[in-house]
Length: 258
Ligand code: PGA
Image (tube, rainbow, N blue to C red; front, side):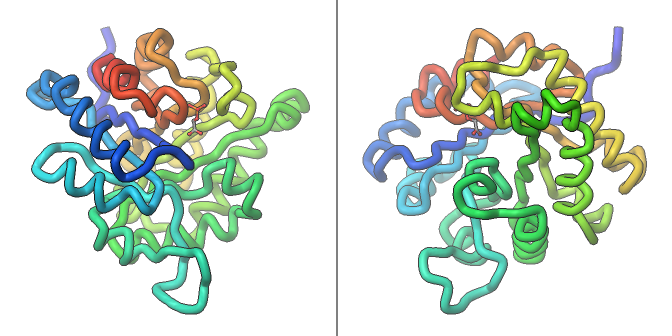
């Protein structure tokens, strides 16, 4: 039997552009009793919710005094300035966030984010004391062309460029194959685990084996309650970054309570 993972599991809800402040309060009120057993467990799964920015104050109020952590879905790399529509790391922290999602494929696809902007955002988050959840993942075209590892390598190396081993300790990686996001086409546990293993090897080469062994790597892409056990049975998979199935308290609780 293999020894238990040194990494604490983490389930993160990425609500994307869904819910109002009132719906946020309702969700948290409904999910808290469903998570009671998890939070009372000896080794609870960590729970992170990333609501849209205007819902963060409502989420912070509803989650106050509970083990639920909050995340921003994005941030700007500057501290402040004339950047209409953007938010800074300090603003997220002041609104109750501990985490921030960086480089989600939807940001890359629709809003022009690159590995370079991911790197800038990552540094800004870490400098401010926010824990980044850094997303990487290949498109279907890239996978079919046999370029998955090359794409992951580039995203990892350029995205995490200049990071220290100490900074890596505060990072979470999310492997999100673009072809699996919102498509209902989940990666098989074996495909996901192979990508996670590859990412952990890259981390080992860059930051050393002990730091790589402590790095949490989440899987994201059509994670659903009926598939979570199979995914979490893979020692390489440390949790999930969940879109659609995180919008309903019953289904997100089922994921946390895998
Ligand atoms: P999905 O989204 O679970 O709806 O596929 C995952 C994500 O985009 O993080």
